[in-house]
Length: 249
View 1 (cartoon, rainbow, N blue to C red):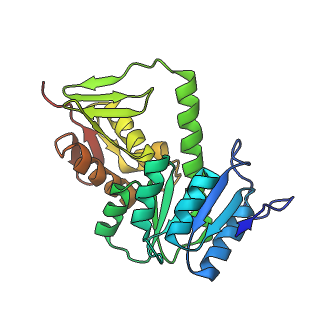
View 2: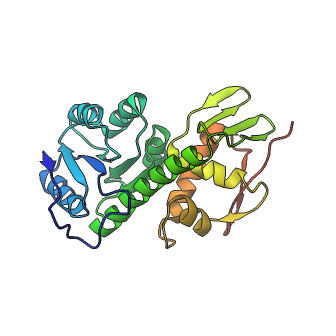
C-alpha cells in the first residue's frame, strides 16, 4: 500500500524545510492503525508506503530506501526486532519503533538492535509526526555537517576515538556500532567532557524536542550507550543529567 501526498497537504503543518520529498515506510499489521498513520504522515507532504508483515517490511526498505521507518514490534512472520537488524545491516536508516508494552527492557532491546526512537501504544498522531520530523531533521543535519566539515578532526580521549567526519566510534581499537541518535548523543556529551548536561538540553539538541516529555528517552539511550561502550564513560548526576568522563590513559 502506497499513499501519495495530496496536492495541498493537510494536518497540523507542512513538512520541515528540505523534507517535503521524504519517504516514510510504515510496517504495521493492524489495518486501522496502519491506515491512520499513513494518512496522517502523507498529510505532512511525505510519500508513505505501508508493509503489513516483517518480511514485506524488509523487502520494502531495500526497494524504497526510505528516509525513516515507522515499525511495530509485534509483527507476523518475523518481529520488529529482527526487521530492524536486517534493515540496518543493509543500509542504516532512522527507525521509530512502536511497542504495545511500556517495558524499559523491551525499549533497550529495540535501541540495542538499531532503533533510534520508540513510542508506546496508544500514542497521539501529533506526537508521531513530531518524532518523525525530528528524525528527518537529524538526518538532514548530519548530512550538512558531513558536507561542511569533511575533515573535522576526531575526538580522542584515552582509548575512545569518535570520528565525526566518518561517524565511527572505536574503543580500545575495536569499532563500536552506534545508531545515528546514539552517535549524536555521544558527540554532544564528549564535546563538553566532565560538564553536566541536563536531560532537557540533550533532548532539545539531539532530539530537537522543545519540551521535556521525552526525558525517559534520553535515559534509555544513555543505558544503550553504556552497554555498548562501557558504564565508565558517562556519569549520572541524579535529578540533573549526564556528563562524559574521559577514560584514563
